[in-house]
Length: 243
Image (cartoon, rainbow, N blue to C red; front, side, top):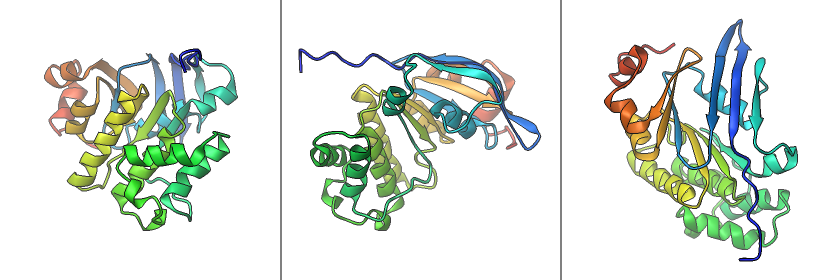
């Protein structure tokens, strides 16, 4: 492996004055920032603030109404291969846990798909359930399977949209351990969460979104210790109403 060159980074990811309109209003409103390799980025905000839409814009599932999103990698095929997204309610194929991961790898034309899939399941603690039908797994197990499926492709950037929503504390801890392992493997993590404790445990920096606008960006401990905006302070205290 020492003679092989590592693939060039698809980062930075630059958003410039990005807006997305739906239902007669801007769900995302003139948002600008740049994401670099390394730090884990957590996007916080009340329900309806635009977090999930912003994630889908970055991932490429939605196109901005205005503004532009520019990756460091311009080749669309390489870009698709090097970034992935895990949704709050992942879709499971009607096959085993192992086969779900193998299918994703074969679609990407990855060699040794079964070997890599088994390693990914092992990394998220699901090796013993490899032959279990994916659709009978618990919610937490399905989320870990979705992480394994995405991680098996070795993306440089992994988007996670509320990865532990509606999960119990044990399942949440298991997902957080899996996310930490993905980050330790060199993947850039960008995630939304409504769990403030989780944001502190898993994040290095916070992007705080309020009514579609990027109100604040700061290191995670600074955000919680000394928020720079009244909206962020109210959100941390649980006083910011949902929109």
